[in-house]
Image (spheres, rainbow, N blue to C red):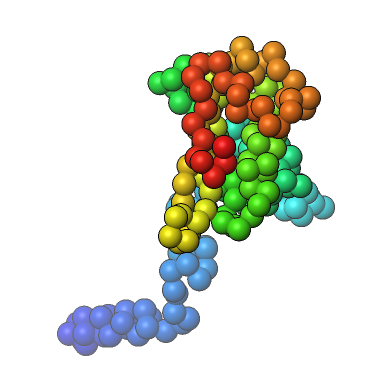
Length: 198
């Protein structure tokens, strides 16, 4: 009798374990246990949905350079869409916080208004640099353009490279400057102009 009882216990245990629903980890929180890899969530008070709960991380506002770029792009919208779309701004710590503006003034080598457009773009950028409130030692403008070379092929050139000291930028109202003179203003060294834009 004892031998039969000893033999029946393992068989009964195996049968008991195989009966009932299968438990899949993660399918039932009670059965699978807590899952610790998810970030903690904010409890939603009764009667509110998730949209009514403030976000834990507020939306980041643009930095000063991004905000300055946005104002310049808006100002250039009526001048040249290419200039606004290609505008980049950096601030060089190694050059007393120099603000460097780089853009494409024109990508049409047949544009007869490219030189005048370049000057109008420069005035918009300089006026916005003046109003930015940023700390900088100087402003450097570097504009590229597409032109026809002597053989008639399309080529990329640096249309202008012009540096303006902070003092000059702050004391000048660029909205009243004659566009023809904007590249004669630099007080540190003369502006460098490609012959197509001089």
